[in-house]
Length: 458
View 1 (cartoon, rainbow, N blue to C red):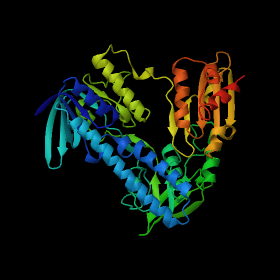
View 2: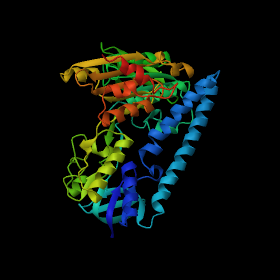
View 3: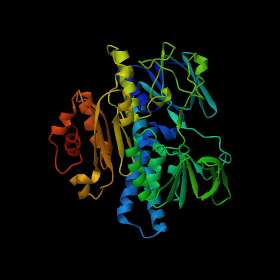
View 4: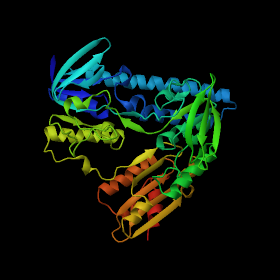
C-alpha cells in the first residue's frame, strides 16, 4: 500500500490546483482521474472551453453565410476538429503540469473508498490501494439520464458530452430540456445551420429569469429559427436506423410525434458519487447524491473534504476554484475563509447574444420587502451594438431606492460576459449604483452602457 500526505480524487479545477499547491509545498500527493480523456476536468474537456469554442465558431460561420446545408456541415466538421485539437492541447498541458512534479503522482482509474483513509483504484486489470492522511473529493457531476422509453442504447441520443464528438451535423436536432445548457447548444447548432427544436416540460421559459428578460431571450432565439415548445412531456424516443421519432404530450394531453436526426438530453446534472462508495468511509450524502459539506467544505469525516460540482452547489469553474481557496486557507491560512463569504457571484449563458446576471431578479427583490427602482434599456440603444451589428437584447438593473444598493443586474446583450464582471466588482466593493452611473468607460464600448442604464434609476 502506498501512503500519501494527500489524495485528491478528480482532476477538475479545484483538484488540480490544490494538487499543484500541495506538491509545491513538499506534500506527497496522489491525484486520481478515472479517464485519460479528462485530465484537467470538465471545463477544458467537455464543458466551458470546448462549448464556447464551438459557440464562437458558429458565430464566425454565420458571417460567412454558407449557401447550402452541405457547406454548413463541412464548416461544422472543421469546427469539431478544431475543438478536438484545442482540448487535446489543454489536456496535455494540465497533465504535464502535475506529472512533472516529483511530489505528485497521477493515477488513471476508478477510485472508491475502502475506509476514511484508504482509496482503492481500479486501473484496467490492476487494483491498487492507497492511503492518505487527508482526502479531497473533486469528482464533479454528469448528465442526468431521464427514464424515457427508448433512450437506452439509442445511437441518436446524446448528452452534452457526446454530442460534441459528432462529426456529422444533424439537419434537425431536438433538445430535451430548456435550461441554460440546452439553450447554449440550441444557439450553437442553429448557428451551424441545424433546425433546432427545444422541448421544455415546464410552463415557463427559463423560469429563473424575470419574465421581461425571458421573453426577450425567447424572441431572439425564435428569430434565429429555434422552435421552443413548453409543457412538452417526452414519452419516448424510438430510433428507426436512420433517425429517431420523439413522442411527447402537450399540456392538453395530445400526443405529438416529431422526427429528428439527433436528440440532446439537457435534463440537468447530478454529482458523481455512485462509484465512489462514500458509505465505506462514513461520508454523508444528500438525497440528490451530493457530498454534504460545512461552510469550510469539510465532510462529516474529519480528514475528508469535498469541492466543486460534487457538493451540489453552483456548477461553475470559478466556484470550484474558490473552493480551492477556502481549503487552502484552512490548511495554510487563518481558516476564516468560507464558501458563504461569496458575494455577488455572476453567471453567463453563452447564447447569442449572451445572457449574464448577478444578484436578485425583480420578483425576488419585490419579495424582499425593499423599495426598489428598476431601469431597463434595449441593447440597440447603445452605439457599440451598432458598430458590430448586434443590436438584439435587453439590459436591466434593480436598485434599493432608499440606500442606492445594487440588488441585481441582468445583461442580455453582446459582450455581457465581460461587462457583468464590472457590476460584480462594484457590488463586492460596496459601491452604490452611482459608482457605475458616473464611472468613465472607453468609447465605443459595451461597458459604457452602465452609464445610461444606471442613469435611469430615480
